[in-house]
Image: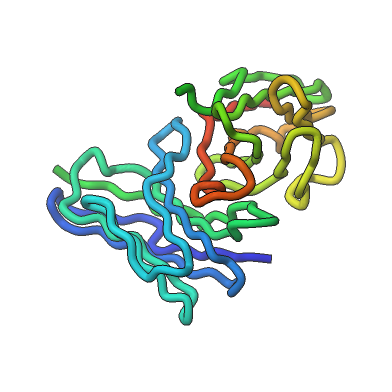
Length: 113
Length: 117
């Protein structure tokens, strides 16, 4: 089955700096890669996703890149703000058939004001 | 447009009792997924259902756990004879119709936090 590894487990940055979180996946058939943000005690929120037919996607301060050959994808947050502090999870799945998301172990991002 | 609803939000059960967790998907969504999250850990897939059908239950423990999504009403995750190790947050997610550009996006409910004493 699919296995997703996520690094780093914790990340502390100064407000205004950039943050990068990296994930690798094992199943070359996976073609859908979402990122979720989870604040303490809250639901995971879908913040951005990418499909395997594109290499990069951007939404304001957030971008995701995908390298299918190397089977890794990354989340980039620019101009970080204290409200970006949360746990971020990457995930991988197929977009048809078996759609179960396989999650990484999470990255706790702390943005210092 | 109401999001994914789950109830109860918190549930306390004694060892050996049954736990029933309910999930109502977003309006227009016909696919439901259940995930379990242990403290300080990521989410683990349990089961994927469509109306009246279990599509994938490869993440469900073989015993004591069952799930359904009837034609009418919410999806239910049922845990019989709960043990302390079942204590976790159980999240439900839903996604839209079978085909289409957004059909694979999963939106999560607020979760049910189960505590077994």
